Image (spheres, rainbow, N blue to C red):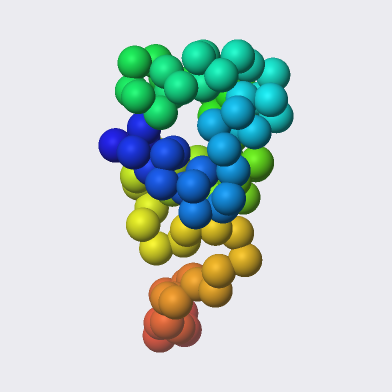
Length: 87
């Protein structure tokens, strides 16, 4: 769930809720609504949160558990292996 992921990531990165609110230009109470799940951020705010925490939006939305932050190496294949060429 987004609210849990936001809370865990913020703490892991060493930010307080007040730090996040200040950087987002929000009141502490408004930010706390995101972490409690009472409100969802706008897309613009979600992008700002991801940038502040240096994680992907997919990670915050619990769509991507592998790539937790930018700069983590990709452990997979980017393209399919070569196929038989057309003759």
